[in-house]
Length: 315
Length: 315
Image 1 (cartoon, rainbow over the protein chains, first blue to last red):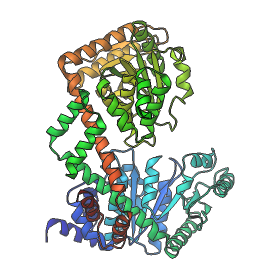
Image 2 (cartoon, rainbow over the protein chains, first blue to last red; image 1 turned 90 degrees about the horizontal axis):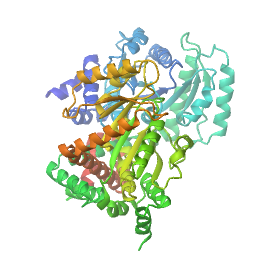
Image 3 (cartoon, chains in turn yellow, cyan; image 1 turned 90 degrees about the vertical axis):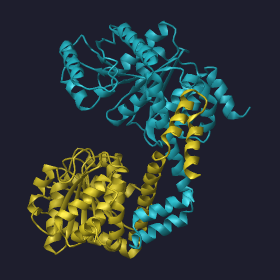
Image 4 (cartoon, helix red, strand yellow; image 1 turned 30 degrees about the vertical axis):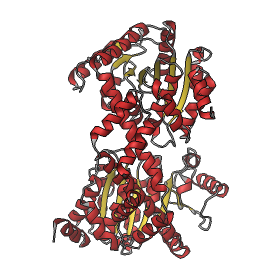
């Protein structure tokens, strides 16, 4: 047995160090990842993947932690990926996450991992699905992906999840902010956390109004708006129940397969482009230097040069 | 004469509407851009391209406007590209820029253009060099690229410029902020604007100290630190003088050719990758769907699927 298959076997046995090692390989873009993924293919797609996103301060980590507790109480094996797109750090190096999640840190049925997107070829859209496969191989049947940050990363994370929870907090026109940021479009479940604060009902009304106005492509699922106080556990059983209902709907409607196939097609395309980039870079540097020289001297335009550079690869 | 070459001829004659049209094609990724660039190749690289960047509030637009005035006074034909990486708007639609630049808006020797990066294939690193060629064809011998925003976009803009000015304002540890953001590494000239405010000399000392500590790859050019009050024109002649000196140094040292060839190589690579992406997408969708299905069913891993998808293209 070579080293790679040994680490895979240890991860499949649920050894935390092996799981961490394999996810690090994914993050680092190690050449061994292809072999790892090949070994993990049979257990791929065995978990319900739940994305959890929202603006800073809405209580994402507290809610994640509360959900982990509820899932563990009913016997699920749980993976958590905390994504910080702005951080150059990763690999569980985010002290903040560890503190917030520390009640689960010693539970052998919970795997917690921080991931950063910076500097990775293809970003989170390339690394997240592969990290999911590692956690699935380790026996996780529910995986929570928590995203800190705004913008593109949420959309990428939603693309990797079966079910996406968008978390909001009462007041400050948060609903309108969310609508502006396009965040409502990715939500399968909307949750107003910190609902013991003033304005929770107003925010819920705003959100329901906006959902009624919006046009969603998969209209068969009506996006529910719920409230919670994650710090005390209020609303968490109801939220979990909705997650189960959404997964059941996904499965019965065939939407689960549709989403996962779309996701796989995007992943294949991203990996194909990364492979083509590597092949382009591996071509004779002298030829590229000559083409660049001709462009600078005005003998060739960059499109024609690019066409030559591509033809060289395809020839 | 076909329509494309007619628009190119009109842009070369300096007609503002034609210049605007061609840059819009570049922004929209029109299929006619390849032909445009082919026609523009001979005039490519004829301008001194100056990047101007810095945090919000340091006076970038005021400084750009003052530099345009000084350049026009000595007879240069000037292009200005105002880049707002976070804005979905473009094409001169940014009212703010028009107001700040309005003293030059009716000058036929000045072309002003706003560009946004959002949604463009390859982003600003792909569109900026092509917009520069349009402005060069229209006879601009100096082009200023002003970037609003932070992070990656500055670096991309610096990559498109021959000379990069980093603008700062006194106080608030701005120098340290700049160092943290890696902005000092891209500066050819550092300018402390709003130098009539308290702390200008301290900021200049800080910056000189940081430059002395830093290790720059092209050590032959010592990055000067100057001060200005762009709103009153103080320091603008000295700044312009330094830009000329830097361009002379670039030319004499051979660094100009080196930088432009590196830039052209990156542009060729970016266009080649975009072309390969288009070719991948143009392959039989049924095959990709089959591969995605096999991945979802666990019969194939995504790397193996990507390899098949790439081989199909290269076959």
